[in-house]
Structure formats: C-alpha cells, structure tokens
Length: 346
Image (cartoon, rainbow, N blue to C red; front, side, top):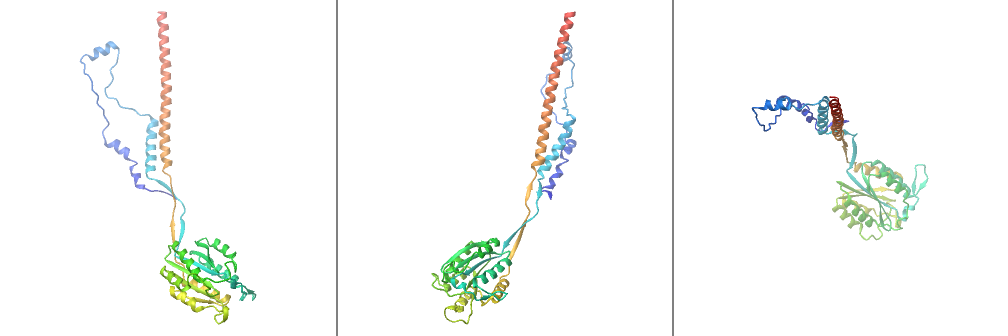
C-alpha cells in the first residue's frame, strides 16, 4: 500500500501560479547616462536604438519542464511511502522454567503406555512434558535437568522446536544417580533475573527426595518467593510406598506452599497427564500481540526525477548554445570572405 506522510503539502502545488498572478514583475534598475545628442552618435555609428527594458524570455521546453519539476519536488516533500504487510510479534506474559529430575531412579519402568506396555518414568515424563510445551505457544520456556547436580539445558525461549529436540535427547542417569532438588531450584532462581515477564513460574518434577543439596530445598523456595517465582511441584511415585522408593511429599508441599504453588501426584501416566493439564489451566497463557508495519521511503524517486530533468535541460541548452555559436562563427567567416572577394573585384 502506498501513502503520503504529509499529504497536506500537495496544497503547495499551485503556489507558483499564485505568485505569477499576484506579485508584480521583477524589475532591476541600472545607472545610465542621459545624452541630448544620442541620436547623432547612434546615426554616425550606424546603430539602431533598442528599448531600455529587457524582458527575459523562456523557451517552450522550459515552460513544460518547470512545472513538472515543481510537482516532483512537492511530491518528494510529501514523503511517499510503501507500507509493507503488517508484522506481528508475540510478547509473552509467562516465563516458565521446567526443572526435570533425570536421576538414576527415573529408569524405573513402572509407567504404562496407552497400549498397556510398561515404560520408563523418564520416557513418560518426556512425552507429557513435550505435549505441555507444544500447547504453550506464546510462553517463553526454559529447561533445567538435575540429578547429582543441576544443569541449564535451554534458556527462556520461544523457539520451542529447539527445546523439544534437546528434550528428546535427554535420558535418565545423565546428571548422576542422586537427586539435588535444592540445587535445581537455586539454578532456576539464577536464570529468572534474565526474565522481564510479570509472572514467573517454575515447574519442578521429581521422583525422589533431596540427597544433600548445597542449598536446602526449603531455603531455596523462600528465596524464590522473594524473587516472585511460583513453584509448582509434580511428584512421581506412589505416595504410599515405603523405604527408599517413598517420595517425601511433605517436603515437596513445603516447597510449593512457600511460593504459593501447588503439589501434584503423578503416580502413573494418566495422573501425570492430569497434573500437567491442571498446570496448563492454573497458569493461563497471557500474552500481547504487537503489530507494526514496516515503511519504505520513496521520496528519493521523485526528487531524483526532478534533478535529472534539470540536469538534462541544462545539458541540452548548453549543446544547443554551442552549436548556435559554431554556426554563427561559420556564417560570419563566410560573410567576411564574401566581402573580401567583392572588394577584390571592385
């Protein structure tokens, strides 16, 4: 789409006509000497007196090009622009950080697939989390994995395809056999200062108990609350289990409660899907769609056209003047030669 930035400048198009009609002709006076015997001098010299006033004359081409160049200049001042199709940009309202437990215990094949086959916990988690990421198209999502230590995998990004590709390559045991929940929360806190979103959410998924983090989970949760980070916790495993397989849901509940979050039980694939479906509801997508239209300035086209026309006109007049002088000199030479011949004959 084409438009003029200052269309009101087109009102200046008739300005030269108004000046021509309303203002008096330009006159320039020069000093002169008045002679009472001027006609004697002119007759002796063989000169014919001419009128004192000189009116500059214009040729037809100049009368045509001048208004055309004026129109081009006014059109350039009006700033013609080409408005390109609108470009939309999504401004996310949430920054979600996913902290996934990939300790050795995630190898346990106690989850069942829809076809009834047993699958490892880590495989079930990766499928459910992948679906969760695909639904959150307008949220920036980051990923942390932890086991014996916590590692940042992807920063906050809208490039979910890259995050999903990296998630598919993660496997149980890659971060060590133990479970450092407090360190994972501490690493997430360090990632969030890069976020300028109003709502910051950490979703922590684990199937074990903290086994000696440098920062205790409860203390890490309190620091997260001070940084306006809400932690939702998803626990894997049977809450009624005993021994090493028992998940300390009391500790997980303390983490969530300290930040205003919730705790979910993912005892199996179905419960895990329900947990993430609930998380999808309680953290609704909140985003703004920003739209802008790039502009391309086109004023240089009419301006260049006006300059080229003026240059072309003056070059043409120079060539015509040069040819006229050459012909006048040639004719003068012919007349002189003819006069000399006549004198010889006489």
